[in-house]
Image 1 (cartoon, rainbow, N blue to C red):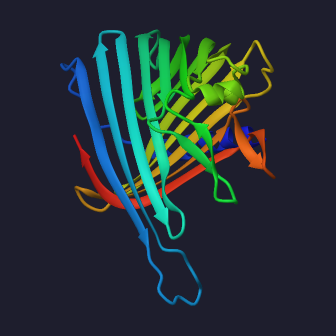
Image 2 (image 1 turned 30 degrees about the vertical axis):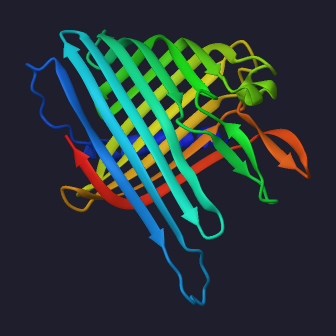
Length: 298
């Protein structure tokens, strides 16, 4: 039900905002187009004898987002790299990370019709540092690490691409590898691998959709949806990763950005300490980030 509602929300946003999406004129003589943005966000809260209560906190996030796109005749090759890392601190908890991601996307296309492409896509995703689940007794449990997990998905397919702001790619024969190179996580079977194994092989269908629209002057909204189902094992258990980002431009360099990411991964069972006993749980994942900061685009 949650997956269906998120897909419906994505389609509704696409239909209601499509007329407002604007694409700048392109120089048709250029084969390569390179652009991106570097964003540094900061969020701070402070309370002193505040009757309603509150906890002092500070957070800082850095996101690098780059596009490298090739276009010649009927061939196109769209590449996106996203690198993000963030830390936050609250009274009594110390510094903890709130964002950690390395995402590489590549879509090779050959034009079949006006808006349709034959495609081959590749996606890679992992993180920089170890991640922990913080227990009520003050201890912490390791739940992730660099290349634990790492996801590599690729396969042939077809895409509907209206422009750089609206595209949907479907691969009915997609291969997905999940790597868990950390020994302690591998030994307990984290992220779907068999205990002691370092990778999980899957073969199924993937869907990758992107939509960005201007909803008001200097305000834009971005939607990213990824889905995957495995033919070989429990195809009804659908992996879903949906992100919605809001960008509000104050001036050339200052922005206010917010984002929510929702992940349903039936294979991402993580170790959780329950009454001193470590158990494996599959949890619906939610991440929210909001802050003001500096953005440099080129």
